[in-house]
Image 1 (cartoon, rainbow over the protein chains, first blue to last red):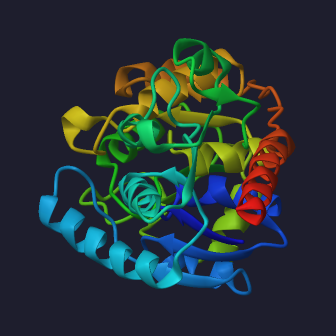
Image 2: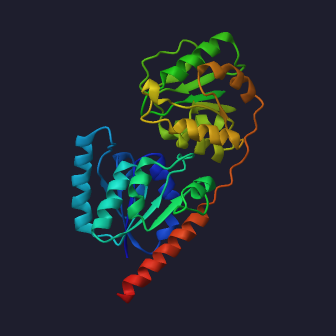
Image 3: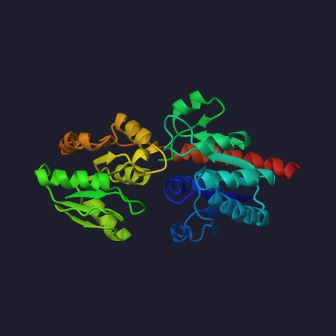
Length: 149
Length: 165
């Protein structure tokens, strides 16, 4: 089975790395936002760098969207797993359109409410994990089994 | 030695200046060393560089008796991993230091759990610096294994359903 791992460079990426053992034995590739993490990922599958974007820069969103479409159409993952942020959300959404299952792990930095990306991807997520128990109580479709850091 | 770090991505002059002023008052009994990113502000009272290579950064972090920084998850995680007392001041959207105020939420929660000390703004900094001298952080019990298990379980389910199609 092929898995796409999508996370912005920095904290989102660190959190996704913390659960890397979960997909041992599957074929994986990464979508991330900055070159700096490429070295860290040596031997962990192909790495695509799509650049950073957020809702305040629509043109950049379109650029990231176009690059993600190209990557996902070529790779055709069975599952997309993401911790966010906006580019991860786009990858999940596109993956879903192409028939992939979606796993969302909302970042631990979202304490009192979900990330905007998390709220947007929620209708398309097959497994939605949060890292604070009170968030799982507040959003009943979200599951909390623990925090990764 | 107190290590001040604000990351290298964006400047955080508000914190750097506040710490600089405090060093001037003599509140710190130790030397302050800093990594301050592309800061416009030039500290007068301590040694600062814009960025450190990873090895030097790790070394400073290890040798410091305490760390002062922004409330980014990277800094917090590193302090908790090393059992290092951390005083964090969140970056704020209203000063264009960050795109949203998630650092405030995160900092307040981690402080409530006893993991870190938090100065919500510059005015709270002096009192918190005093607290930092005796602060012993509560170790964090994270559980990545439980998350790994849940994701693996889900992946198994997908694998099985793909096979049966």
